[in-house]
Amino acid sequence: MSSTKLKRTIVTAIIAMALADGSATAQKKFDTGATDTEIKIGNTMPYSGPASAYGVVGRTEEAYFKKINAEGGINGRKINFISYDDAYSPPKAVEQARKLVESDEVLLIFSSLGTPSNSAIHKYMNAKKVPQLFVATGATKWGDPKEFPWTMGWQPSYQSEARIYAKFLLKEKPDAKIAVLYQNDDFGKDILKRLKDGLGAKAASMIVAEDGYEVSEPTIDGHIVKLKATGANVFINLSTPKFAAQAIKKIGELGWKPQQIVANVSASVASVIKPAGFENAQDIISAQYTKDGVDPLWKDDPDVKEFVAFMDKWFPEGNKADSLVLSGYALAQTMVRVLQQCGDDLTRANVMKQASNLKNFEPAGLLPGIKINTSATDFYPIEQLQMMRFKGESWELFGPVINGEIGG
Image (cartoon, rainbow, N blue to C red; front, side):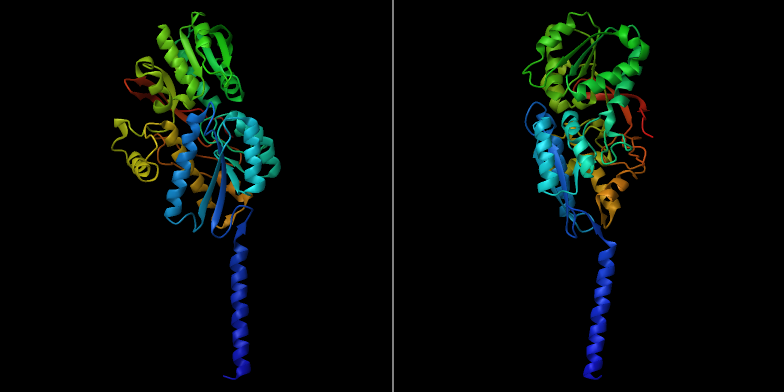
């Protein structure tokens, strides 16, 4: 072969390689926060402050992403999980979200916790067109794809949950005198409103007292004394963990014996029930969507065995009895599933497209029969719950899995 022909062959080969490379590159789409080797995920979490019990959710997610990275990442890309403390303070949440989006340049913000904190960044995230994905709060407003297409919830909505409690009371205690303790912010007001909606025309006669507390209060003992004086025989505890535990403990100390209902967000044995005292928590009712990592009922369950193995290796300092840990575990799995479905199209628009295209997804840890389903018009991933009653030192499930569906 002549030198000229050889040069031509080499040039042709180089051009072919360049075209092939260009074609391969063209098939890959990245927005800020994603590359061939990395996916940056942002998060805010109350690691300190009045809701610091929820911090274990972020720590569990971090541990799960480390596990995924050690196993090769997602389509060859490692997750860079950047999580900041917002102390359950809306102004701090705004500051941290701006830092994540504008300075750290994350692809999305995932599992940011708390209704007040997420409300504070809701419009900002949608104006920036950055996914505010799988928000760790049950406020009903996270499922509004028409007005806020960049925001999606994850856990059952407070509307679904409150409707279940209302149905239970209307059937089992139609003449109940209900006293409600609620957190005086977006979280507490939302779930209180949904409870009233669920009780319908009977709300006005059944609810004899409602009392709101501020997260800045060191103790809510005074609120409990006030509510006991109303003569109520049902106490509904719409509080975050620290205050829910205080309420249960004080009710026991006062010798008050109402039927108690506690919101799912404060049903953790480790964070709420044990600190309040098992003796004070007997027969409390709540609703759940995850299994219990230490309940003998699930000791032979493959999902729970997988969870225990994960905890032992990746998060040994975590508490397997904390339902918040299991929530973080299932949340992280859902995020991974979405990123897997994205393939090499890691644009923010495709992240939301894949998040709204989950079909019968069952992360390890959800109760049997509970599945994640989303669509372009349904931004409520989990819409099922099962009621439970506290007995001894653990929760006992009762009744069927209930669908509280409100999505499109």
